[in-house]
Image (cartoon, rainbow, N blue to C red; front, side, top):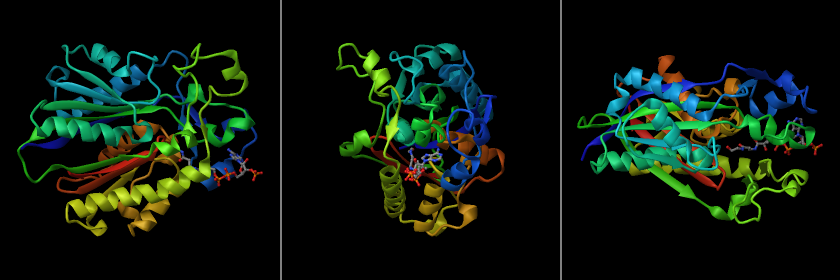
Length: 331
Ligand code: UT7
């Protein structure tokens, strides 16, 4: 059975930088509060007219170039997002169109912050069974247009950013590299702890003036509950991955945790007893870009020389659903 190697990575973030101080113009908050509780210093937000498909395209082109692969060689697209450009169809088909490739499948994944890890799990399975040889895996998010930028929405609004990350996956016969395992989970009993209530297809109509008045159009969250589950589930998922591969946390060269909150990443690091040099964080500059955090961080880690052939990489994510998971990759 072939394995899945990551041959190229890429990312794109909007030019518009929004600092914590900029947010004080919209709501009662402070740079000090945001840095202390989340580690975030600034994030990128789209400008009017920017689309998720365009960001996905830019990230994908970078990843394809690094991989030395033509878009026409891609056999399938797997695109993770909770903020598709349209209710339907998914953003994947817009990326397929923009790439100018043939009638390859484009699968959108709806697993929120865990979307990249879920997508990697699906793509890895396709590659291992021989269904597809080269897969473009993308995480893309536009969060800024859906936030409540008033004091009432500040707990969510300060956290999120926009961006896209991509990875080119290809079958390899080289047993010394590739995805070693993926572990993915969900627990729907917590669905409403972090969610976007409206629009809702079961309501007639799907979106109403009451949804605006009662603020159901904005995402909502019980932050402390999310925090508590995140710092438990991510280390559990990493331990499951390590045990399945007969490895230890000490052997991880680089952990890339989903960038939800620097305090969450630090607690995950502590629970796994990892050194600072074993963990990659960039939330300071981008905030939480949801399905895009891991591929953006991976692309940056590669460009900063933090990843070398033979390294053991670990991804772990947690988010709305709840969904969570981990992946181990021999680079
Ligand atoms: O991918 C998963 C996405 N979600 C997450 O990762 C979220 C996980 N949770 C968290 O990161 C944290 O719970 C937060 C950073 C969201 C909040 O931190 P916290 O320490 O749990 O604060 P809190 O919600 O308990 O609120 C403490 C105080 C409250 O004021 P009072 O009631 O004590 O007067 C909030 O109103 O902080 C207030 N507050 C803020 N103050 C300034 C909440 N948001 C803000 C803000 N600026 N942006």
